[in-house]
Length: 491
Image 1: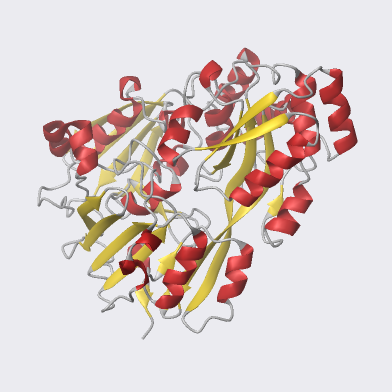
Image 2: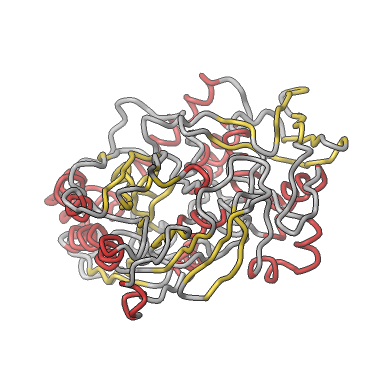
């Protein structure tokens, strides 16, 4: 996501002339506005408002109807959804059951190569089985089907087929509360309110999402009135806003996990001693308390207590810099150059701190910063082509570790660089049964494998911090969605 610093433009510090427009400062521009192509935060923030999903989550986190008004299980592997009859796409075309089936079948098509495929590849097919009815068939029981469907956006079949994937991404058509009106590459995406929306209408006639990579500039824009909502703040910047006359901080603890991903296919990380050394070199408490202001939480597993599949009491290798250095020396890896992949979306203070901690083991760490689109291409490549080490922040927005562990560890996933038949089977078994006890046992085994074999090093459960204009009313949610039609100006 290459972003152009808006601070370079005099418009960046000019207050909005009217409150008819909401201005949102992101870190980068979206890498895609096709909701089936990416789901990184800067993309999701925007396209989530252009498209409706089959189901959604309310502000309390419960699964709620959206395009589907109700659903019924015919068996463990067959679900019938009743589809709303009063929804139109932004071009005036009615949304039909065929569009819903097309959207599901599109994202599960392996040749389409969606990075979200691992979330939905248990779905075998979707079929319009009535004028307002869609039937989904899954490969056996799929306990997290509804939790995953909250992320599956409905696209118009006629528009995708007429424009092609690239054309649709450049000018997306959805049925959501806001319409796409323009994309100035590297600068901003513009939306307009859908006044014919079937549901809760937005309070703002227009919305502009801008790419502002520098956090200090985002804060300056907010305090000057040039923006109304900014993302990606740290605890220090949030503290600054507490005394602001124009703005306020808003935060929520999410299910997003900050972690380091190692590539066990390449030296020196094909030696387990070096992977263990990385785990022992990272002082998670220092990162959380010293850099993140204590609002985040240290983690020893790729799950939070909000996830189904969290293992109470599981501990990974604990912080021990002397042992980390000994292991690197013993493995003969001291002085080995390590390329550490990152992108501007991530908090670079954390990346730099982790890089220094790893360097203290005797490895030579070189941070490689790229735009988000390039970063995503690297971390979703073939296992041997993925970075030696990369920083990531993962959320499935599903509150189930299937959405974390399957995507990051199963050999079929574009994100994974691990290929272990035993782990694959455990992950498959866990997503193929409705027996919660069996699922918990399988996930405990997988999480223990992660703790001991160290393909991933979980660091912290992330709190997300926003800055908002004083008169903007909005309650952030753990799933990190910017639902524009759930925001309004205070009276």
